[in-house]
Image (cartoon, rainbow, N blue to C red; front, side, top):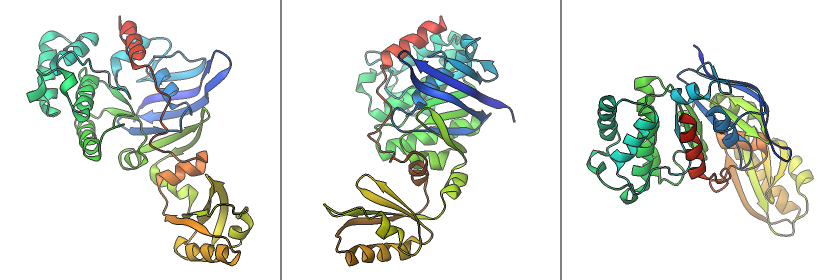
Length: 334
């Protein structure tokens, strides 16, 4: 199987010495669904911008479908699809007109474009809304339209930057069913950034976690869960409690204690037995317990393990000026 994306010692340093991407290396296999995760400011959006030629690397190598992103950016853009985090559909145009613009930008011939547009409108269940202004669309309809625009030219690699952000559970599930269908039928490689770790867990063959510009973990979701091992108990004491690390560290079955967000994260083999023992240890020390919870290994726990912070839905990438990015993208296609 050939590589769809190859990254070697890739770096991006912004003016002022800010190192957003710090000599990272990874690869994405052709036909793979690859998840790229990281907290706010970790460097994932910058990495995607480098791979899609919206930014130029400071150093290192990146190839997309075997093409160097710095040597032939136009060829790279012809092979990729890109769905931004923010909505990029033109409100004052109809759904069909938006797709016609996308077809023109990618150089799809008129007759071929009409056929593809009709097919995609039907596939995305937008045929009846094709003549309506996009400003009348729901959030889910917008995302389906933008997904259609991203695949209209039949890209080999589809970059999805937070594609379901802001959608309700039904909208998320619906969009991902379309992505699964596209992948099954065409073998398109998917490069995904997402806030929803359950989404990456269920949909991605492999994931990489980036933090402070560096790749801190990579592998299949199952492999990463195995790395952290055991269960996790989260305990939050009442106000004014002293440091509980020594007390909790002596509880039978506790392998590691970490302080986190005013509470404690306990790694253990059998969380069911550790929960009552930890609570009893606190009570014996005359310390009130505000809350205690048990979590089995999950991708969220992997994220916490390697970054030391929770991946909250409201802690997304820094807001990107979508209009500017789209303008860059269109100008570079000329």
